[in-house]
Image (cartoon, rainbow, N blue to C red; front, side, top):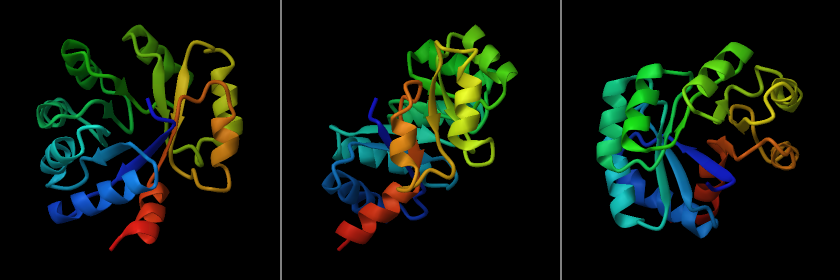
Length: 183
């Protein structure tokens, strides 16, 4: 898994190449394309086809139907804002990593009971930031976190320096890449 996971919202399929190129030029080889738009599955398929060396996943996957569509489009991993047992089951059956949003001990314990040891900590800025993440991590040393929501250049390094942080995610990676590399 890459340490930097851009959260990518593609509203127009024609923006897919521009965004993926900008990320690659920025040295980022990963993208979480969100299921917030009608063209998400098509964007994942296009990104996987044209950028096969990039790790392309699907984000904001909130139900089984979206999960099937994302995996069929080529998603290498699935991310949810919360924990869905149905999505977890689909991912387990297809051997696809699933990173559900978990911000309470009960959610983390449920994830562990499903065999999930890496979870999304979202929205990190609302649930106590790094301090909140460390408090949750204390009783769960076997869990790795992917904080998103409120992650930016000001706090990126302190999150990445935390032993139990697997990666960080954010839309700001896309904004930075496009401002530097978009033609």
